[in-house]
Image (cartoon, rainbow, N blue to C red; front, side, top):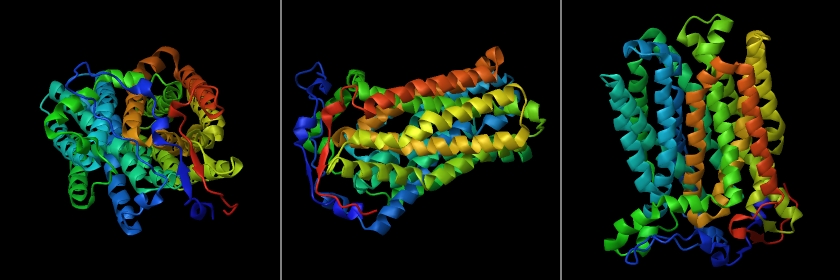
Length: 487
């Protein structure tokens, strides 16, 4: 087995993988930017600190935590007309609250990523899940539209810490050649959540008040808070604060939160291209989900929120099925290329796993979906099949993209992930807010065509990264001892 023969590893000097251009002066000679020293992950014993059963338990809790923020992005979609009526406004205005939510998720991603690098995983996970619980409660009790918008934005800001820190914990627990499989389960919530949200919301709003959607969200986050407090340990191999004097931690943290650091980090072309690829998929997904109530309902003569909510089961089932394959496929791709390179592992080899799904599967599904709805062809069977395949192909892509962010620079993985989430959720917010106006203006067929072009252009960017046509961030690579050709 390949996995059993990846123990004799020798990583190139970690200091050589660091790019000095990424160091941003803080502007104060008395305050240093908090930096983690690159650690040597060639000693695989660092991944054996926890027993396998403990790792599985941690992953189960992280799956629940990871589904909270994404499920809230779409949980109210099927209830938009009812919420709008309650606050005496329009559906388009209520959809802006969803855009604010996803936009806040993006803005907070970098903040949570930096804090995770400095203070560790546990402080971020607990702060994020408890604050998400409190702000969800605020949404349920909102007396007016302004309060609803405020608590929606705050819950989006708080919940992203769970998404950024979850993959970092997986990077702490699992070897590079194994982590995509575990990460597929952790990150499946980012896609399964948005698919389940409308169904749950549809059931609730059909039989009771829309506020019960947020009471359900509050109950879930309360359970997740209790489990996280009880079962999530600190997993970080090192923390930036540990190497800093206590009296300089606040100043060092503020310096690390300098937005220029993020700009410099993503001035690296390969990181930017991977982030744009992730963004195109999020734009596609939220642009895909948002108009269902207003576009599919009248075409298919749906009359209740429950009916449209059930329609989201199709992509959700695709996401769930792909959870069993996406991570394993990405890990197998890495191992295959280790053999081809006579024992050398490169982070960008993992991106090869996305080629058939992002280059063909997702774009074709998007075009068929858009134009069948435009001309009202195919009916429910065709749309259900296409939405299922679309969900499957998307979750076959994300494990490779997310794990690349962990692999490319382990000592700053949460910053890379945080920046990636920032960019992708800005596009998700745009997709959520602009989908309905765009569809009303140019039709769903052309909107889906534009989304498809966006996906294909960013896929072209990934091909440049895979084939080394752009500078590689840090030139990170790992030499692996002789690997057999086992399965």
